[in-house]
Image (cartoon, rainbow, N blue to C red; front, side, top):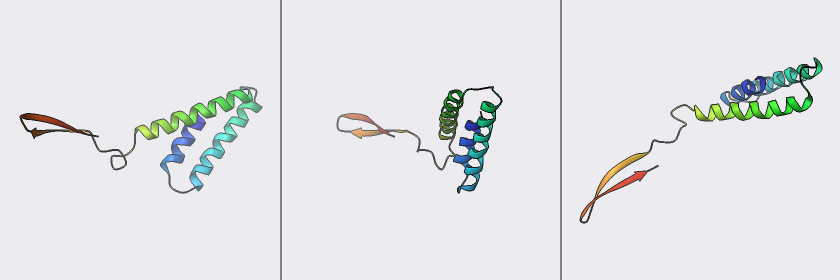
Length: 89
């Protein structure tokens, strides 16, 4: 969970200071979990990979409107002998 939150914070902020702090805190949490005997090091690496992947996916999925792609549009166009549809995406 720490790595997912860190990746969301890192993607949503400008500059390098806040992302560095977020990933540093996630690393400290990971080392503490290993030190307390709650996880193995492989668990921490797998959790970090999954957390970063999920965090980045969620941020990419919920971009503000100005950053997202324009919507798909369908237009009806006259053609010789009938009508056609134009799909723009």
